[in-house]
Amino acid sequence: QMVLLTTIYSTIHKYITSSMTNGPLNNDAAAPPPLPSMMHSFATPVQPLSRLSELKTLCGSPRELWVTFAIKFLDSLANFSMHIILVLYLTQEFAYSDVKAGAVFGAYGALITAYGIGTGLIIDRIGVVKSMYSGVILSLIGRLIMLLVTASTAGQAMLLIALIIVLPIGNSFMFPTMMIAIRRYTVKKNRNFVYGLFYTTMIIAIFVSGPLVDLFRLLLSGDDNILPDGSVEQAKLMYFAWTPYRGILALGVASTVVECILCLFLREIKVEEDEATRTLDTITYESDSASAASTTTSTQLRTSSFVVSKTSPLQSMKNTFRKGSFRRYMLLGIILTNIKVIWRHLDATLPKYMIRKFGVDVPFGSIIAIEPLSIMLSTPIIAFFAENSESLPMVLIGVSVASLSPIFVVIFPNFIWAFCIFLVLFGLSESIWSPRYYSMSVCCAKEGHEGVFAAFAFAPTFLAQLPVGALSGFLLSTYCPNENYCNGTKLWGVVFGMALLSPLMMMVWWRWLNKEEFDEADADDNANVNNDDLLDEPLLTTP
Image (cartoon, rainbow, N blue to C red; front, side, top):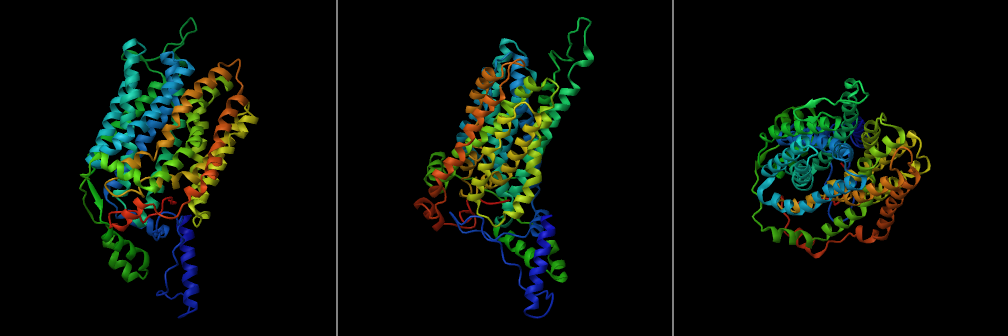
């Protein structure tokens, strides 16, 4: 749809321009005017490519870009499928109470952010490839431990080690590294488009995760192993019961093994900005067939080895925190944490609530998948109609819609259709603000010093797990402890009240968030900008 609309727009503009000069459809007519910047704050905008040209440039991208997309899909599939069943896994197989399971869930997410500060500095020192290896191997070890441990004392200790140490450190490597990798393997003119594809890859993985959880619950429910006394005998694999939750964890292990193999195809490279820019300009503006034919072979983007930064970790952190754009970015991330609280409740609270409210056969995984499906369907529409809109107002609109979406489950907590409407609206809001927020994570950092900046890109997502973990257990044990008593109005009313704080906080801090001028540290960096610096990219952009 985007390619078709862009082609129509270009044709109409060329016809009008040529009619006023040399007659209809003059091939030498001027190219369509570039679309306005998404946000004028913080930087001078980069002229965007048309959607068709953006697609063409991907054909010349290095193989590392496609490997990164594949790793992102597999890693997201393993992570988000585990998130959906984590609290149920802890309660049903390790006898954790609602409060204890919620606390572990919250600690796991918060520690990803805490470890991310340290791993962000390490990423800048060792580069993308070694960081990717580190994250994948640690994630594999953590998922193997979760799959193989039992409810024994030693097993529970190993489980906590996996959830509190190994997996969080692995994840704190993976998320920033992949975002930095996208920057290395793209150029300014198509980077926003590629970040949009990167975000879409994650959403597709989340969408697939929900139905997979229901599929494993159906296949490994144990209904075929009913004993004479009416009890159920779970299928055995080695020494533990082969439950649906173990099946999901095994899927995560298999995905991570494939990630390890894909890492073998990565190189420590970057796309040469000057050569790539020349190539992209050729793709964009040469329209006659002869010129197009002559430039077909030049669309392969030229790459070179990337030399990692030798700056000390302390100096790198100091330089990052001096930047006013970083401080504004961090404030925005803190504000958005309350919105991400809703998202984390979909994992920590909704599965248990739906089982206790609607019965064990409720397909909560497929219901949760409505949210990413809504994102996938609404993102192209939002991107088209809001393409000329400034980003910060769009973030405020998205956050406002997200904060209001739980009102349906507060008023109608006994109906599944209310949860469906809530998830549709929440997905719509996510498609409005989320891609714009994540794309800024490395665009305001100097090349070679993105680790700390990118480590905070997913901070709201995982930092939100800390209050969600503590609150989820309390809400479930207080308002929905079992199938006999489950007060959804009070439970989701608390979530709704917390979400309303985000748009209110954005309005209070609006003038500072929308500050146009550079701070002194930004100005110093911009004075020394070269082709490796990306300070001339907008802070908030649209994919």
